[in-house]
Image 1 (cartoon, rainbow, N blue to C red):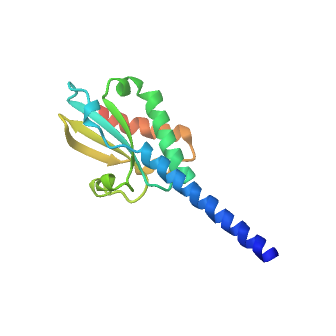
Image 2: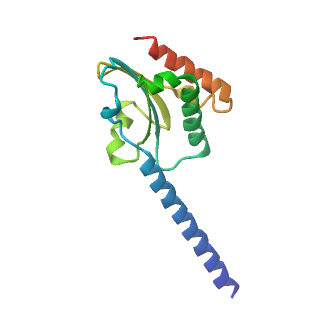
Image 3: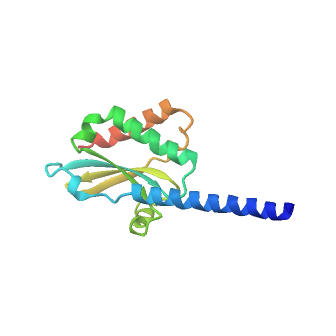
Length: 156
């Protein structure tokens, strides 16, 4: 009797874990999009693409990096986001259609990447690897994002 109860409990735990994983993967898949060129302003000769690259499985730190980056951009670069000079994109590199980004930007982990676009062509890019170092200080993280974005924007 105890053995049957143990098997039942273990099976239940396994099924709940599998269902949770599938739900997270489906949620991640629907939240990830490719860069849509139709949202790029026609009169924009200079644009900064700010990417957060992740996979299907996301730890608390990965989620925090995305959150802190978005919050930093939203609070410090409202005008640039609203006029299209900065475009924020969250991309799941585990999707087949997005795996090219791994090679394009030499990605080996979850990453924030800034891409400088001039007249629709990529001029330069930078992987903001220090986001991992500043993860325990939201203020330092935000300052790092601000400084890196400003470096890209001043190159107009």
